[in-house]
Image 1 (cartoon, rainbow, N blue to C red):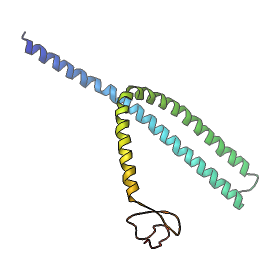
Image 2 (cartoon, rainbow, N blue to C red; image 1 turned 180 degrees about the vertical axis):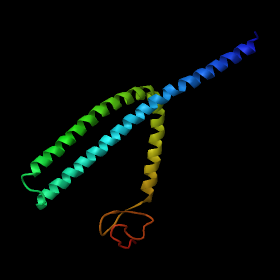
Image 3 (tube, one colour; image 1 turned 45 degrees about the vertical axis):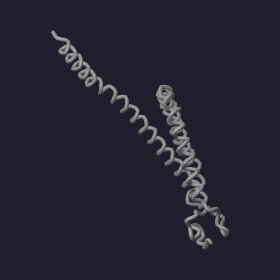
Image 4 (cartoon, rainbow, N blue to C red; image 1 turned 30 degrees about the vertical axis):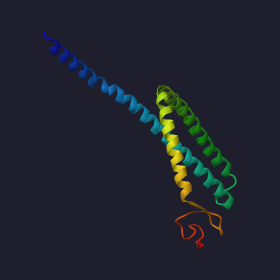
Length: 158
């Protein structure tokens, strides 16, 4: 058997091995995406409960809800909110543990990226400062050098 044919067989075996290993790496990504979807759903539920509490308080102040029903409804919503926050804390600790493992591996790359990011931020700040023309003399809101009128109050700028 020639040396070229041995290399060809090894190359085919490596390609087949990579092909067979690919689904295992996709499942890890899918698991991470499922966890992030669960976290998003919990955050949406938290926002919904907060909004419901605000509406309940507002309706009680307006007199739409009887005084005897208000504490029970409020306690129910507070319990739901506490459950959601508890679940969210559990998910965040698990998710942050996974992220910390990934971040420790990419820490050396992040130093290079941090320098690039800092230079981009400095350039952006410099660009933004050159556009600013100060503040409106009437309302005090910030205005740009290209503004002829204040965007907040409409006063003509000289």
